[in-house]
Length: 309
Image 1: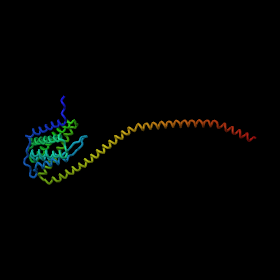
Image 2 (image 1 turned 30 degrees about the vertical axis):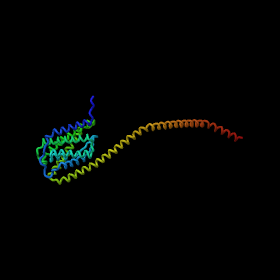
Image 3 (image 1 turned 90 degrees about the horizontal axis):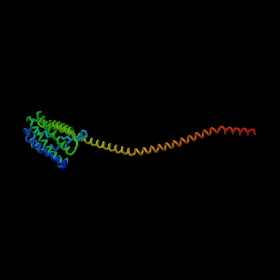
C-alpha cells in the first residue's frame, strides 16, 4: 500500500494548481485606459495600501465558525479601474507578503498557499474584467458592474480554494457559509471602492470624511471585539465553575445522604425510647389510680378509730 501524502504536500500541489490557473488566464488580462488625472499611483504606493488593508481585518463568528473580513478588495477594485495588470499584480503580492511575513508570521506552507491564491484571484479578476469591460469611464455604471463581477469571481475562487485546503487538513467548514461570506465581502468592498473611485476623480478632498467614517467604524469594531472576547472569557469561566461545582455536588451527595440516613436512624431510636417511656408512665398512672382509693379508705378508718379511743 502506498503511503498517503502529507497535508503539507497536498497543499503544495494545490498551490501549483492555483499558479497554473493564474498563468492560463494571463492572456485574457485587460489593460485599462490611461488613469484620470490625479489618481495615478506607483506600484509601491499601491503596495502600501494593500498592506494597510491586510492589517485591518474583521473576525466575525457565524454559526460557531470564525470568518475573516478584510478590506483588500477596495484597493483591488481601484487597481482594476486605474492600474495596469502588472502593477496591480506586483502591488498586491508585495503588500500582502509583507503583512503575512512581518505581521502574521505565517509558516512557509501557509504563505505559499496565500500568495498563490492571491495570484490566481488577480488573474481571474483581470480576465473577467477584460472580457466584460466596455472601456467606459470609472464614473459610468458599467465599469462598476464589471468590477463587481470580476471581484465576485475571484472571491468564489478563493472560497473554493480555502474549502479545499481545509478539507485536505481534515477540517470541517460549511461551503455555504464560505460563499456567503465571500459574496458579502465582495459586494461591500466593491461598493466602497466605487465610491472612493468617483471621489478620486470628481472631488478628491471628499475622501477625508469617508476616511473619518471608516476610522470610526474600525474603532467601534475594535471595541466590540474586545467586549466580545471578554464576554466569551466570562462565559467560559462560568461554564467551568458550573461544571466543577456540579461534579463536587455529585461527589458530596452520597455523603449528605448517608448523614441524613444516620440522623434518621438516630431520630427513630430516640422516638422509640420516648414512646416506651410514655407507655411506662401511663401504666404507672393507671396503677396509682387503682391503688389510691383503697389506701384513702384505710386511712379514714384508722383516723376514726383513733378518735373513738
